[in-house]
Image 1: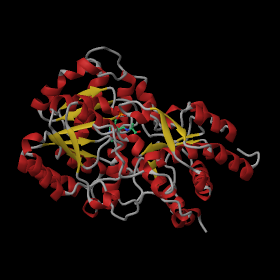
Image 2 (image 1 turned 180 degrees about the vertical axis):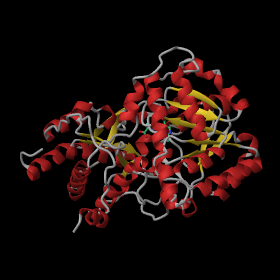
Image 3 (image 1 turned 60 degrees about the horizontal axis):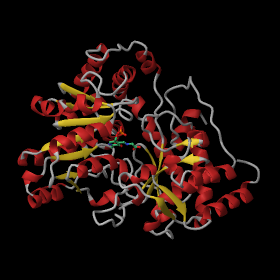
Length: 482
Ligand code: F0G
């Protein structure tokens, strides 16, 4: 059997790049992993990287950069105002999105801060396919409210709907009528909808949303942070886009939106962000906030090196062989987990693999943060750092009650082009072991609970000594091996 056939039959992803810089990893013994997670208050955000073997916390700012990006960083033009680097980035954005104005910001949430301060007022309602944590916080801080108008399939863990990130158009219209168009400053569409498992919207759905926005005279804002995965899914799953290039699809998407913002920690595979618009009036309203919060208009809090890397990264995003690597590895991981009966979000999305903690540890009540508990258990089992995306990532309501999340997920992010197939396989094996021993996992309770974005730095403890028991079981099963 030829290798090609072997790869085709197993549907194995094939790297279309080679690795030329490596970083040594460290896998601690299980007793030390137990100690590290307990010192971190059972919160994977508080682990030190030296204690982590495979860092699947996020894809944010940790995607592998290309040789061309690194080379571009060397020719950055450092200047407080008017650097050539800024104009190169601006020109690349104008070329790709067709938008005239680019307001740089230090990362995605900084764009959300500016957009929310300018457009959200007390009483505003912002409809969206799904919220993201920082987005919701900025909108509520400005007195507004988020309304999610996703399709029914969005929250079905296992589904074959290709575009679970779509908006339900009837719900959108009903919502606008209900709250009054004057209270809706904009509709927000999130590419590669993060919190429901990196699920895309279709180009057709975006067009329909645009139609509604036109009818009611409402702005359409795109969060393009995870656009590269969404582009891949539109190209491969949307029949009418099969023959379109990634560049053409990108331009069609951009032409439908009034404002596009992005985290360049994801889109562009570097670190930074920015707001793009073709509308001079909108740009004028937002511009003054850039020097106030970010930095002068030609750097916005970013280093010029990062700006050079983003310009090249955006160009590389137009290459299907570059952007298909993430989704292909994720699809492989999802298939391998499914084979072992591990509950995981389907169809596979972008960003990472999303394990369904509601099913995995169905004996842990949501008030005890099943996804947080599972994330801590995954670290103990393999030194793998994932991220809780469930009730812990929500904020309490105005009366201090828990907001139980629709989904309880542990996200195992696959930063693009970082992990090898054997590291993915190792992760699958450790999850399979954990699944066999899932009854050992119990819940968590807060020891220190911050009021805003509590998942970032809140400290918790296990409700019993279950973490110790899990580590002991690991030792029994694996002996001296790590
Ligand atoms: N929008 C989306 C869809 C995101 O996923 C993120 C960040 C942001 C906005 C904020 O961008 O981090 O540059 O300020 N997501 C990261 C994650 C944090 O791990 O998923 P940022």
